[in-house]
Length: 455
Image (cartoon, rainbow, N blue to C red; front, side):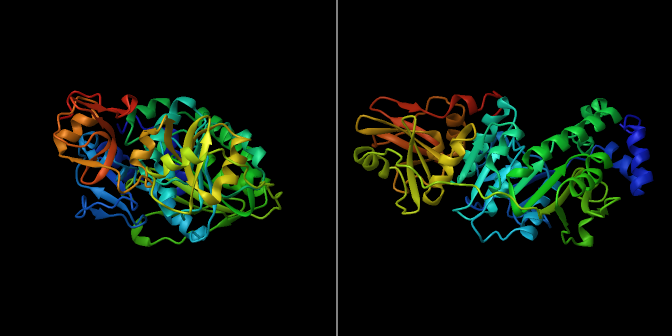
């Protein structure tokens, strides 16, 4: 692969950042691959207890080998997420720029498949709001699925263009923009990306990044935090963007404390001396990455969020729903197009505000539909943190769990009749309905295991 690495990129890294080119090239040719995961603190497990801890992410772990995650029921239950190690540095940035004990509103603008969104979710209070947006419609389902498995009810997903967020002026306390980029930081992980790289592509990406950032700036409130990142090594997409941000908008760069032992390279932009953080795979246990943080100093309009309107949950439906949910005064049930959702009570007005301005694909936890005297529960409820602890559950062994996740027929002895949560090590995987002569498997077909080699 050494001959394939773009000479123009190597030359620029030597000239601009004095990179150790031989070590950098060697890292891309030795065939080494890192595997890292992040544990879900909301669904604690004992697995991976011996794994090496990540220095910049409390729940990050390095694995000595890459297992078959598809064959692990705990992965499907949302107990952990497979994520690239360098990108988990976002946790350090969030902790050093925001008061995470406060109830805040955060936008993850380019969110699919959900790595940074689930990380953000782990750090927020239960009455904070996370809006995970994905521009590309076909990538929205995987984002929703990953956030559903993570569990909290204070997460919303939208499918909107960045320019649509001009409608939410001054709304967010923080915006994370993991911007589309030329992808050079992923050359080791994805060698095919080398053939797609060019100096012209870097320029186009830089222009696109500016358009995206300009579109969402109005939605960040005064003193709000903008976090910008890429998986690119190119100065035009990183430090030059930092200078452009400081030049174009009233932003103040925020320096993030790091340890020398981490191997992260702190840089400063040419004009405004803005601090940024570069990750090189020959220096850190991670892939190529860049991140920088800014505080908005300019005044923004204060959003006019009206008091929530009556959501239309009648007494009969309310009684049915209460049987399926944990009892909590902090939980609100809302009716959206004859389906019921659970959200934090303090976010009901925010939900209606977002509904009137964006195209929402996920609104808290989808409970299900009331049909007659019963509920047809949704998969979101099964893997959420709000399902009633007294709901009938069946603990499956690993082989049974894999069969269930493949949506195969289950053969389990049970005297129970009706809906049941299928679980592995007490963590729900999804619903099944137990009848007199069979068990109907309701695991969603669109996310079932389809690989016949997974056993």
